[in-house]
Length: 248
Image 1 (spheres, rainbow, N blue to C red):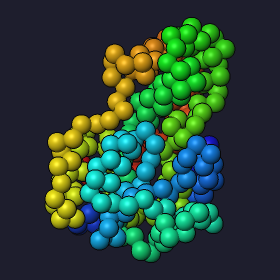
Image 2 (cartoon, rainbow, N blue to C red):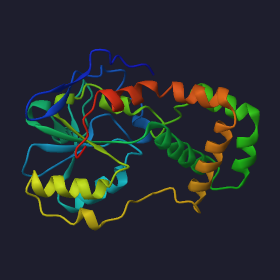
Image 3 (tube, rainbow, N blue to C red):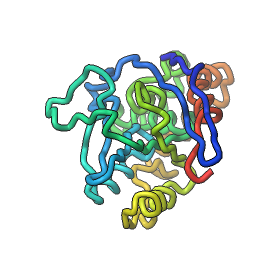
Image 4 (cartoon, one colour):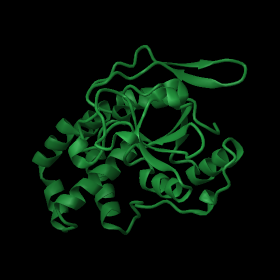
């Protein structure tokens, strides 16, 4: 998908930096069949703060930690869609800060593709033979986004008021930074810094091997590799030029 981000900019004053603008709605329920609606979040029980869930951006880790702290599932009111349980809907004017975790787009996509193939091949070794097929590389580089785990991160920011967002990088000590933010800025005691990431594609795991194999195949074929990266240009532009990350 293509997103209109030309009017989004990173603004500054003497005390802070913030992202100004909004990503327009292209379909917040597009992946509802896979269990995700844009705006799915977890709300602090006694403060107007939410964590916005973005698949494959430490989402399992974040959900686990915040649920343990008593945060509750909610849905930001970003469009016409309403949850079956309407009490879970959360108007934007009742939210002051939105925690958003972002990740290197290509690394996130590789992890998402590894999980995608793991589900469809039931962790079978035949996946490697399938990936070796030239037609598979054509399909992958043409479509790129196969599900919510491989979709652009911008998709999950549709209609989200970006000036309210506190952005975190997944790659750089996320557990320590989230722990610090909760403790220092929200006055929430926590042990998040002690917790390890979950669902990580470790080197010896099935998903880890698929991830590395697909990465090697693409890097050997510059045409398909560049096609994949082209689909992530807007993500990289947003992350590199339109966001100030917490702790940077």
